[in-house]
Image 1 (cartoon, rainbow, N blue to C red):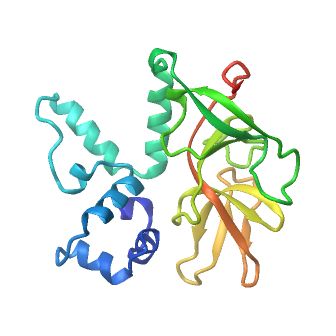
Image 2 (image 1 turned 90 degrees about the vertical axis):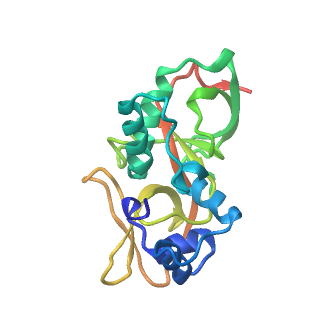
Length: 229
């Protein structure tokens, strides 16, 4: 799962506040994470602790269902987000259950461009990923086709994200929705758009970038869906 996300042992250790050598020992089977770390790993990779411990998917499920569940757990994070987004939209909200979410027309940072009005909106519970801290409006095409202009992106507020993940960043006084990438040879960090026509931002030495959060999903914008709480 670490390789599927493009994470080094050091990068995964950083996410868990552990050293690279600790992660290496886990993977070599010479040591095991404690229960608290297992829970953190399960949350980070969006799998169950049982799955991390190698416990099987229930045998009463059809073979094809078990195969698909296993493939989902081992898939890259972007694939998981896309599959979850598709499936979630096929399900009705449970008994009309709604969830309150802070919603911004642009990400909430000082100095961000445009209108940064915050409102609390009530969304169908099945539209909102469980790790969501707030939602933002995507205002351009730089992250198309995964996050097209006009969609609502859900963000988990975290101080850092792994290489290869999409997040919201404060950089040069503006807010950016970008994919974080690192040059393995030089160690340079780039905030990269998914749309080839978008602008790549290189985080050069002396230039500060602040991670606002990790993008955990998106949904199509619908004024009827965004009911003020």
